[in-house]
Image (cartoon, rainbow, N blue to C red; front, side, top):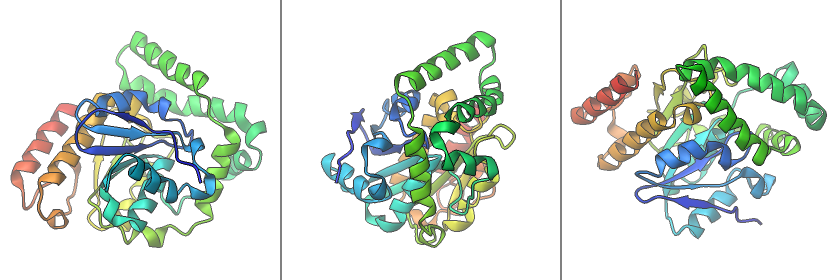
Length: 290
């Protein structure tokens, strides 16, 4: 059994940040830096864990190694599936749960994606080109000027080149996920849960509708949209992402009875109900993000 090499930055309430299908924490560096300004952030690369151990055991060892009895899990895309599975199986170790653009456990690969999974190495060039074309509308929306867009692209592509993803491992992780029946598990999640998506027309990687299925799978889960983003808001708008996550974590920690938070209809009333002062704080924050 491996113990993943962990990066550990910042001070405050602990967050475990779980990367998406590309598996590299380095790609999420802007979010790590933004979150660690006010919280203790731990992250790792998925390839450092055994595939068969991906959905539970290595997170136990990660928390133990960090001296933590529990933490907030922030899962991005496939990392959201991993985080939700762990929250269902180890509720005492998850103080709150954030799922960012995570695919539903009921997600099924389409014909193109099935081809990628069957021939990951041969499909790598077309997969990469497809990913760039899907992300460009979001990059344009997230940054107002072409110099800003080019700066983001150079930085992001630099991380991708320095810390390359493994197509064969990516395919193995998806196969491991699809071998499990996770939907029933997720109904057992008790941790306060925030579901973050980008705008529906900008996320061309995971359909927003797929992520929103968590609102029916997890009792009391709430949803908020990170404006002017699609699938990679934690990288294209890291400060806004960190404010949203940090406010959720900090205010949940203040609630003595978090299960009594009212389920809401829309992000601007995220904490409305028993604690109006929390709702006002989130309304102010979401107004700033707009």
